[in-house]
Length: 292
Image (cartoon, rainbow, N blue to C red; front, side):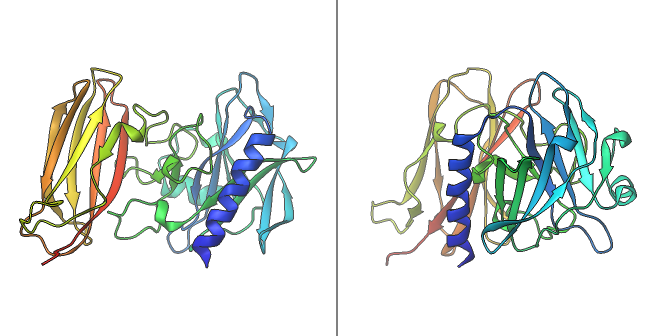
């Protein structure tokens, strides 16, 4: 039921974004499942060349798929291409995460964000919806054993807030949250996810000559990218390494032979990065079956 609702709200969000401009504040990061006794937070980013006043915006609660309570935001000047963090408890955020700019943590009243998924709506003070973000636990890294205290970060402000693949768990290296500064995940995409073409969503390594091996072909517009590629089982254990600091050419392919592995779903995790340290993660799920 929730999955169907998520798709419906995501479609609505896309339609909303087609109607309203993409300058000004945008939703950047959300901690919706804090650790026990800690506070949620919502980070916004000013994707424009001029400062904007928070007082010109509201956060809106969604109830039964409709916009409900409006939460006016306090007056606070958000610098051009700058961040602001909204929370009910600033001291909790500053004590639990590496906060580089404490003055960007703003206490205010916010709706509660359920752990099993929900919506974050940013609107102007005259009730025009700017962005509608439908989040769910499925956006987190499947490698996480516990999502408590891990924020969801937006990877690119040039891509729609409603794109599920535009969100990912904050890096453990960054302390699982980056309130008030650049997100730990790639802020802009190095390659389109379609650059990696999987031969199938399932393989049957039974030696019958049909879909025995998974082939991943890639085409790059750049020649300076490197990649790691690993396969994980449902328990999060690495079962295969396909690429290790490999320099990607303009095109190529890599194969995975799953012979000997039990049936089930496996995660193929491809991490692409450049010399500056910008990283992008491509995730695909592949089913291994035995047709015999």
